[in-house]
Image (cartoon, rainbow, N blue to C red; front, top):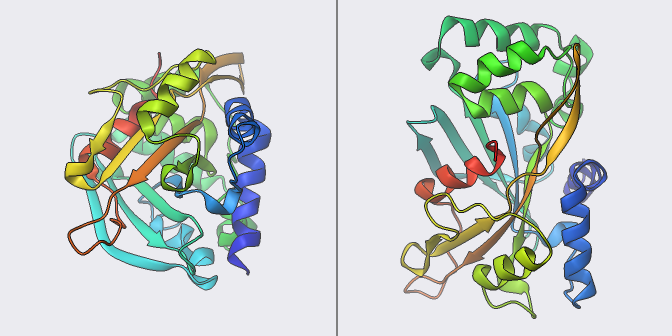
Length: 269
């Protein structure tokens, strides 16, 4: 598996199914930005800590294509998540940030609903991590179950509705020529009608932690449930600027306090 070919599967799915992603990407190209799917800062995936589909399972194809696990890990005690990121085979390619819901820290009901979803994944998919990581859902969606999950964990309800896929891509602000920082991007996108994630401020982090991030709020999508279509938050686009440390090296990791609020880009709004 060649890393670029695998990443393109996530990118093509993301562009095809997230209208904002396709439109914003084109807006950047129209301004003269030289960006491609490979030049993004990172893409993010969501999963569960069920051993059949946990981080270790999802990341196998990336490891086989040259990605390496970072020593950095990230804990989100309030959201009950764990995450880690993986470095690409070449620095001009996106990192992969993957998080997992810590099922055992939730109610029996939530565990029951989500475990039943994983039970329905065909062995042909479970045994093929290359397909699994962007295979979306394998279960019928019940809106009452979605609401039960949402009351306990927004992350859980998002995963239930969308399954295995890229939750977002993040544009690498450092490489841009017509924007200097995330604030300029936010201001530009507001003029185009996009809602910016302003949870704990529109800018997450900053030079003091060597990483600044911002994002749009996820657009709503019409999702087919067994009782009809419902409009719920989908995926979003993020913007990431990295700053050099005292040695002049750009910070390679993520900041849990910032990521915690970026997660909320898929909250209802």
